[in-house]
Every structure is written in structure tokens, then in C-alpha cells.
Amino acid sequence: MDPVHPAAPACCSWRDGTVPGRTHDGRQPLAGRCLAGWLAGGLRDPPGREVPPRVVVGGLSAGAAFAMRLGARLNDLAPAMLASALLLDPVATSTFGADLQRMARWRLLLALLAETHACNANHGALPSIRAAAFDVIALGARSTHLDAEGEDGDAIGRAACGTPQPAAVEALRGNAVQWLRGVAAQPSR
Image (cartoon, rainbow, N blue to C red; front, side):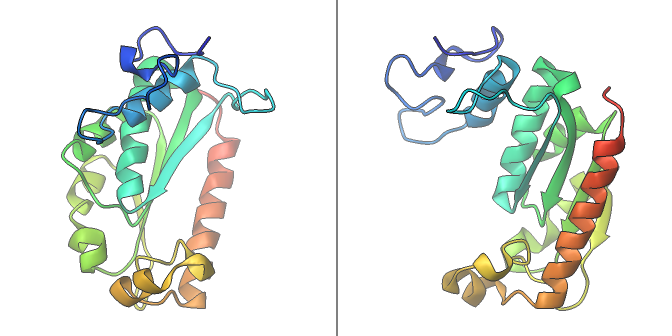
């Protein structure tokens, strides 16, 4: 039996053999809601270990928008489980601002931003991030959208978005680690 929170969408079950949250045209608008339902319902990893009691959602680029969708729904289902959010050069979606606002009231939130570029939609997410009172760290000159990927970035990404510079990669990682240590030290809410 699937461990799914009772408030998760019905389509989040794996029992019928379909991919959860997938619509008839292949999009996955419910994927974040489904994952939140599984987390709140006691999801375990394949060896059977429990998910930690507090989680930080995060993502790079459009993955940050997915993380906000997941975090907003987890906030509804199991608010004590959601510790925080870390956004790496986010690109906004239509629900991004509302999702940020749903999470922002009681949590430490951080956005790490590269220089303005087409790859980060020219910082189109920044107004929503500021409205939600996120801490913002601008990584400065010569930072790229791919700094979070560092040496793992691919040739297509480098060609489109710029080559990550070691100093910028180190700055991003150092800021993220320092901030996550602060989150870990915070009591549950």
C-alpha cells in the first residue's frame, strides 16, 4: 500500500501502474503535490529508512519553482516537516509567487542569484522573492546560472549560460552550506 497523506490528490497512487500526477498530455502539474503527499504520509526510501523529520526543499532554475510547489503543499499537509527553502538562481512559474508566500511566514528562506541572464529569465523571479522576504545573496560579477552545477555542468549548458568559474562555484557552495547549518540549528516550528 502506498503511504500517501489522505489530503494528497487521488492521482498520486502508484497502484494503477501510471506515473503519479501525469496528465493525458504528459505534463506533471501535480508532481510536487504528490511528492508532498508521500512525504507527509510517511514515505520511506527503498531500504526502508524514514524521511528525516524536517526537510529543506530546494532547486536550481525551474527546479526551484518545483521546490516551491512541493514546499507550499508540504506546508499545508505537514508544516512542522518543512524546515526551509533554498533557491539557486530560480526561474519563476505562474504559481511561484503564491507558493513563496505560503511558505514565507515562519521559515528561513534563501535565494542565491547569479548575474542577470536569459538563462535565469533575467531575474524574473526576483520580485516574488523580495515580496516573500527571502534572504538574497547576489553571487556577483562572473557568476553564471550553472554555478550550482559546478564541474558537473554540461557543454550545452555552458554554451548557453556560461562556464562556471571556480571562485563563483565555491562562493555559492560556501554560502549554501553556511546557511543550511543555521537552518539545522533552528528549532522545529
